[in-house]
Length: 333
Image (cartoon, rainbow, N blue to C red; front, side):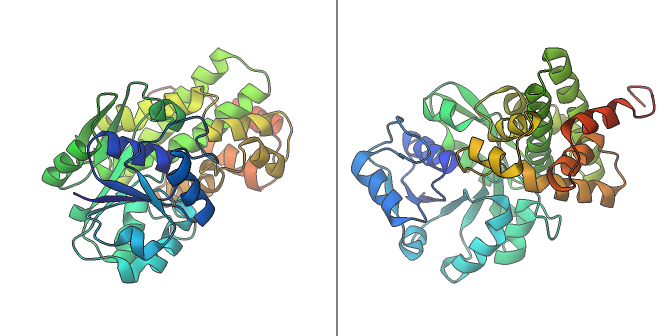
């Protein structure tokens, strides 16, 4: 099995390292030739994972045709909102026997499609050839070899098991799951909830507040997931609550860091600078998750508030007041 990771950001680079460590021949595509050269000469990604040694067997290229030539597994490590444009550009080099693995955690803004649906729409691949990887996987910790677990979601169990083998290392434990919808929505919504947690932390609130947001965020995720056809057990697992807790709690999370800056009163541009220019997927996905929830008739107050802060000029203090002022109701009904 020959794999290529399309995208040399922090998570794409980490996954490429995992694949090589698992014994899977892998190359990585970097958009900028100078970054590909740096990875090949220093065995390090100085822009996104400085100080992390990469395997000598990991080869980086900046030519798309060279990257995709002969690949059996195409791991898509580009941001969710640019997934379609990238796939359309690569389409002449994609073949009918490739397996696609999405690393992107978001919902397309223009269509409210999940990433697996975008992949199918552009490439024509059936669902059996499309997988997603999702779980509590902060790039820097996984790249450092700290123990972690993840989920490969694919409707084709046999293909999922083959991918499980390709991604498994002594420090990275991979589970399989046929519930692609749950895996994807868990990953998309948790980015939005992490923004909310960051905003609360930026306001100086403590663990009670953060635990409340995480728990009510899980309730939103489950309501939307079930309405969209997900298995609630997926959302109670690694791709759901596991990913939610990690992303909402860690200062390594780009979305939490972005939200923290907003909570401190910084502008969107200033918050972007706080993440060192890396994409905080939840900033754009909050609008598409909100639209998807509206499509399914699902109440998502935290997502509504985050979207209004990011895109409608609502202040963080006003968002908090709005949430606390909602009508009282039973917790479970």
